[in-house]
Length: 157
Image (cartoon, rainbow, N blue to C red; front, side, top):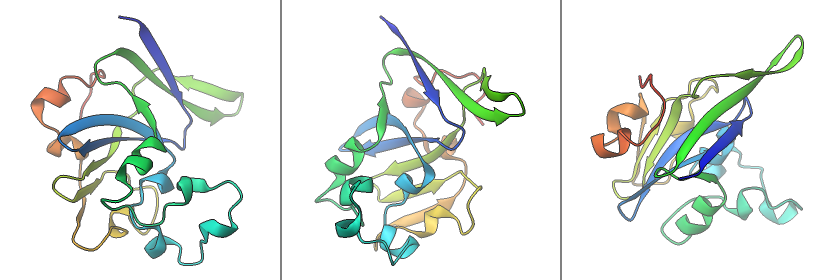
């Protein structure tokens, strides 16, 4: 098995997604984890965005989950991988030799959004589609043991 190395920028967050009973690990900037962007930024109009940020998706639902997941960077759970994260220091970019924490868990089967990231106020778990439950909590509490064992970093909190 080939070792893969992923270098996350300091503003990128890890999230675990369950969709159709398949779990997948991804990373992206925090705003990519918002499931209902119209609640977060009512002024955003993807038709006026030449970059088609978020692939033009505003509210994530059953009709566009595949496209949403494809817009995130995927890390294969079954491969040997190493995660690192960069931070800005006085000397420029510094490589932190640790695995960044899991910040989000999105369970499309249960319509559950767990937000473990507290950097942005108001919390991102408030911007979810109707019928969803959003919680501010540690995502690790909601990861099944057989998936938790596939996460390669040592300190899972």
